[in-house]
Image (cartoon, rainbow over all chains, first blue to last red; front, side, top):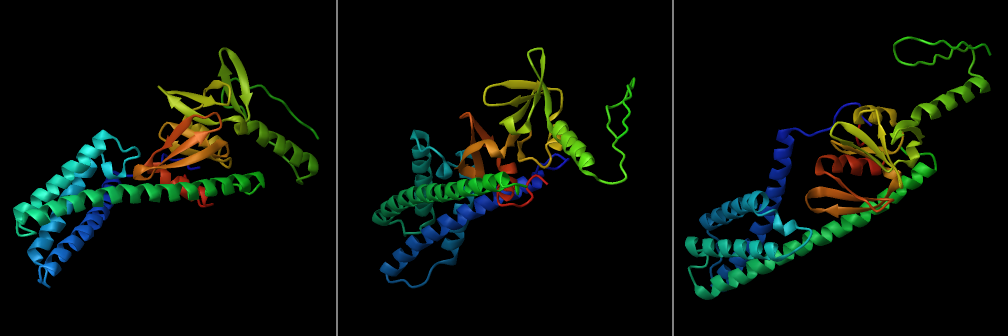
Length: 158
Length: 149
């Protein structure tokens, strides 16, 4: 063990959170881009608007900050209770509101409602993915712990 | 083997072993001293107790006082957490937060928590949180790398 105190700097902490937010933004952006592209293709349009994509990126990035710093990072929550459900619905409504405001789906009610449903589904999927990832990580951690303890018993620990 | 015992008025207690060859006798004294030095002196109520590091589940610093927890007992030690970290160098202890050191050999189970934190369930069922600041070093340590180094 070290003789010095082991802590990370403020910058490293900022970087760690920032990477988490970037990851979130990518995840939600790609999912929404898929829905947006489907809308365009079904409507017979084979080009995506650069402006809409920029809006989508900025929106998902901003929502990442909101989720991490204000809404307790609810999509990664250990327990999913009433509070998390409220946050999930709130964020989905914000995305839907943005889609209406920026005209991503040309303010068509049907597609906007569909987008709300898709966003809710996307959040549920993200919660499930994060949970599965933790389960796999947990299994690996416990295997490594047992191996470490075995090594220690055999006199090879450390 | 000739030996001298000397009482001193001040300064730290010290053992100096001088030898020409590292004989079995010298080896035996060395291993005895290393074993003794590793033992942690603590107090239970007013009684002084020597504790084997392997018996300790975790060590915690609370309000400037340091406590060592075993399966059944809590002992107050006069060492600081940093000093204990040095004393237990080479044993399977890990600094898991600013105020705590855990004995990895006494961890029953690990749980992966959101935001890359880890929860360790100790032998007595107590749960200890390894903050994300220390979690990546902990993972490295388990994989045989140099976490906490």
